[in-house]
Length: 225
Image (cartoon, rainbow, N blue to C red; front, side, top):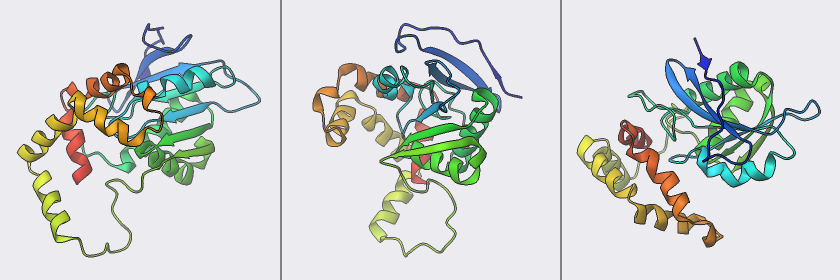
């Protein structure tokens, strides 16, 4: 059974937005909602990428809520959502998004997804069209931990060796300690942000903070499976 707490305004949220939690498969899922529902246009659902969270959409929510009802969700394993020791996959996040739309929002949405969130949103639109009024892909990722339908090409020996190494607990844990350091996060952001002024201390901390949660290393390791 899925339930949700009543939304409560928080000082860290964009103006007039509210944060709350929805219980999905007995796990707490964090989300944000802002703006008024409109009969003449569907709401927007913003879905973050790997290692990100609803915090990544802060400025977008501020700009969009004047014209749309805007929702943003932390995928299971990320942000302020629970990080259980589960098998993470595109199918899992697809199910989470579809059930969030049907149980919490209650009407079809325009899904806007970045990276991993783009792939999960694409899967919802393709497999659950009743939940999708539209789709926006922002630098979308491809299949993530989903069985391939056709045999993959022979793996590169070096890449295969690195993947095998990263599946081991200690190497994966050590790499995670490195990538969640503020300096590493900042260097990575500089490689993907055209506007370098957008790389603030707050943005770095927004990405680093969820990586300190128990369970975060295992979510990170899932990318190598």
